[in-house]
Amino acid sequence: MSWEVRIQYSNGTEQVLRSCKNRETALRYIDALYSQGYPLHVAFIVCPIVSDYPSLQLV
Image 1 (cartoon, rainbow, N blue to C red):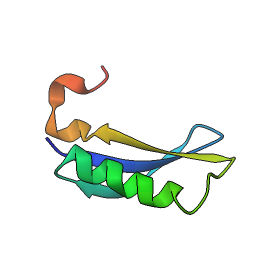
Image 2: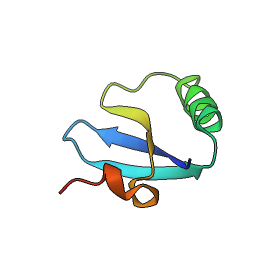
Image 3: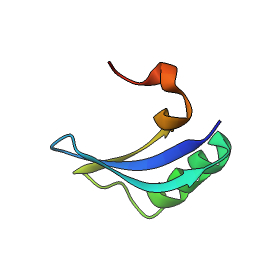
């Protein structure tokens, strides 16, 4: 399964920062980002790449 590391802004928009083949790698990447401090206006999230799994796509 492939995973995306995304940044989510306070207005709800998201931007892909990186793609990973392993969820643990993606989580370690986020841990490294948060080790620099916790921003108040953004969140870093890990989610599966939807295009790899058509059953997850919204209709």
